[in-house]
Amino acid sequence: MAPRESIVIDCATCPVQGTHACTDCLVTYMCNRAPGHAVVVDLGELRALRLLSDGGLVPHLRHPAASAR
Image 1 (tube, rainbow, N blue to C red):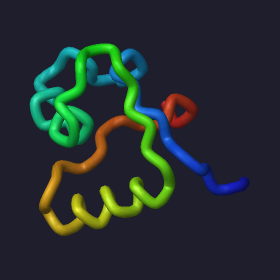
Image 2: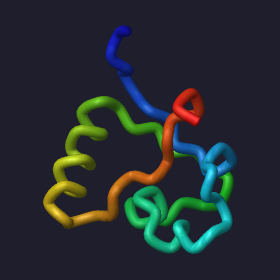
Image 3: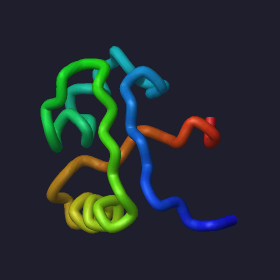
Image 4: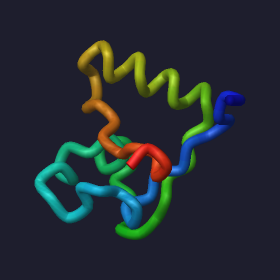
């Protein structure tokens, strides 16, 4: 399987949308986006976010890829 070039995070496809998990969601934390707007993260940005998360600087990504559900 080829590595993904980017990941699309969209609240509309999040399995925990509308729950308490939204309050510390990485997407909410990162950009305080308007409801319904997707965030596109490229591979380099995803790696950086993982490093920040592993270091405890931002919450872990909770949004699984749609194919992983």
